[in-house]
Image (cartoon, rainbow, N blue to C red; front, top):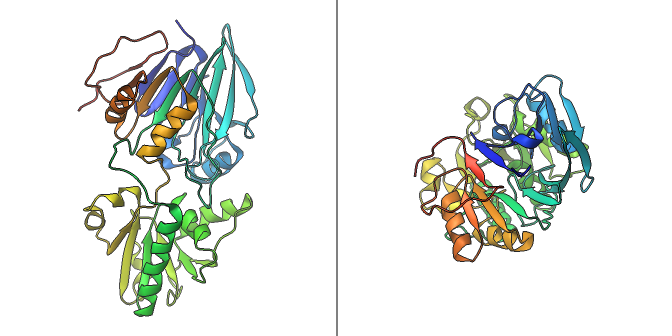
Length: 348
């Protein structure tokens, strides 16, 4: 059996021959190592031993307490490990998703596997530029893996967000932007740094933004949102899942806008009970997913998350050998020795 044979389990990918997990969602306390692609909450857990970028290590420590054995790798720095009879290397490459987000290039016995984690090809104002490389096997996320998902240029989306904020302020109302505390909020703060707008940001966002600054990022002027913070004349940024009423009780009239790739769906702003929705995303859209696969030139592609089965079919239509590992494919393929087999059944 190939040392790159793998299984999929609850969001994580496991390479048994290397005793290596890729983005395990369950804490791994045994001898296995875990590659952590980035510090979003659905990609981290209290593992015993991790492989990750320095920025992800710093962000992860701010979110999960406790000590871990950390192998912090600089970009394009191969690190060699031995597992049983296998001597293998892992190299981290920027993924462009959030600060420190990494792809993993794993090489063993003359074979290579590239695992993307979450990524985007579009340059972002507060994240490193994605660096695809060629590999024999590609495991890629497919969050927006349908043709309908084509994002407008980041600059035009930021311009629309700025216009929404200025219009709201001109009406003597407070603009409230709903964006994830890690990644999306910093993209807005960096992207609107020259706009003349000032920001009041939720404490969760504030804590992570200060870590971004430790790594050299610069932002528009901001203050931490607190009960006694005056938001008059400021743009407020809060995570979408957080109820910020205690901070905004005296703010007067509010206008809310949600920042998400799902804004391309007409129902998005109603689902978030927002006045507007802007398609600012940390993920690759459909054209970039296709372009990424073309740059990697793999002989085999495995898809996971989002529209995994749909995108695998699109790849097969384009001439690639591809299958979904996070949901059932409609087409059953003969599997080679490196194929990744689901460890449980998934619905349609």
